Length: 334
Image (cartoon, rainbow, N blue to C red; front, side, top):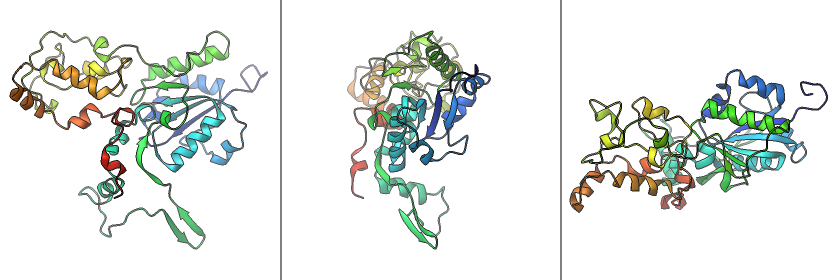
């Protein structure tokens, strides 16, 4: 029942697919605001925090869950099954965090084939695997047959699999943004506000990280790019990109309060493409090109060759949702 004892509480769910679990922690990091969730919602499905079974969700009426926060990309058939199940059972389905929105770090595996992914996981120097064991799709035991989810050739975002009502970016979303979203939903339940149009990005800004950043931008004369650990002294007031440190702020949506540049760390792009950016990597390449101080093609090529891991830099969080989507090897038959 609700706090006033008259109406049942609306139902809330949260699910974790191909992701690290940081989004779950971010929800708990809203501190006392989590009490508003408990006071105003009945939590019916949140596997990381409570005992619940898929069958419990399947038994619900379609649309019975008011709000579902879904974090993580779709990498196997279990992820896809639960995404479609929760879409059917939820009035509002939110792609919560960078992995559900863009694929994020797990999406970088889209540059590799399935075999390359497994070889990296089970046969590289950081893994002790003397018997060269790999996961099996099924295994018979005395009690029956054990199965593992089918591993897909490439990772997809939540929005590439089901219709999504709202998108909340971030790796993870910032606590103040999560709290603001909860306030909007609760206000809408009370009839005090309207929900944003379907498909909106919420819990984020409408500009770029650069517009939130307090650093000065005035020197566009880069002759070399550096890894941050190679820079002996970082000017705390000057734009990091203009110091030759690759920073993704020009292409990244605002809303994080520029937390990384504020502490001398470059933006890595976890809040996704800024509004009107068609392809994140292309926008970032354009921004980087604008600070190179040369008109000589050979020198420009040398400067660009100094960028470590360009594909990982330009598409660190965004490969699965970009125009590239995946490398050719992801579709190989290896």
